Image (cartoon, rainbow, N blue to C red; front, side):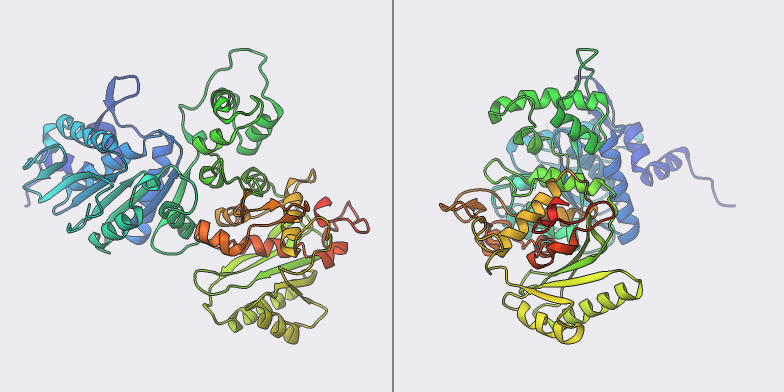
Length: 530
């Protein structure tokens, strides 16, 4: 008869397999009110934990990129997760890289506090211990921290766990990511966590986030909005306080309660002085520091989106019904990192039937076959497809020609983005005209809906207002949209979904595409009006 496990063995086994219970019972933190207590997950940490555990069950490893609001405790969560892994497993090495020396010291202070206060029964034997490293000698495991700046940081190690903190703010970020990734084995049980507040677009963190949203590579993304945090709420000072209209619309969009709305009002009031905006307007700094969606997080004061993120988020939250004829927009990839995008619009609803990207490299004929397949499927379902508009610029020309051969001239239309606009006195070319009608469609009084898709939002919000080659009005007051080549250089991606969406506003079908049950199009009216 085998011996029964001891109390020590039973406790160790219980906590080894349950990180959340272990944190709540054994890991001590210093709280914001200076008191000390165990780590019970807040709402943001819980959602992050659920995402990490779900990915671990599904893939056997964790590869997360976390876009976050400020001060919800992600670094504390990851420090605890790393301490749990390295103290219950043999041969596990964890490495943390932060953006500043103070941040490095703070995170290592959290880890040391865990180690010093964990119950004796659960504390591993300590070997080396200094200001940057903890080694658990009997387990051959340990924890090491460093600050970004030295391009060699993290190289030469064999790691099972890596935590990159505030990655968007690292100097030499590309070199660090490339170097550390070589130290992580692509093996079961390994974990990589890259987390940051945003720091504009075009940097390595933004590029990796965009790739994760597109389903490219190993990483999966999770966005942590400010309103998930229980602390971001406040009782109104006045019983009859009412939110200004813009804030009331914002609260309605995100489902905020009265206390969350008042907290946002007070925080926006504080930050609006730095933005030089009116107190009743939601300033760009509030949106950047406390984002409600990913696009807000990445915006900067010098590169505001031509299509504001709020407009897209509002449409994502709506379930507007599509009715009447359907039009399909097909944006053709130009090789490299570009993907072809296919998107439909039926009156007030976009993407109700098709919203997808495909990657066939430089071979455009598979795209022709896919569009033909989709058209036949829509017809089989009885969908009233009226027009397929194809970006016929450059490599899109052969796609347009082949689709005309297979589907007919009546169904397929080609659009030259650089061609002459319908309203020559207002727009520089057709691309600017179509994008502006898309913007006004989203901003109109009639509710419209788009898929609840982060990648779609990122693409729709890609063109920026600004000087030089960004979206602007020329000296003749005609609107010119930021060139795709400039946008790709700035953002490291092409807004494929955005161009496909704009194609659903090609000017030669405005007389029918906006039709719906209650409103008939007026002659010459833009589709966005309806």
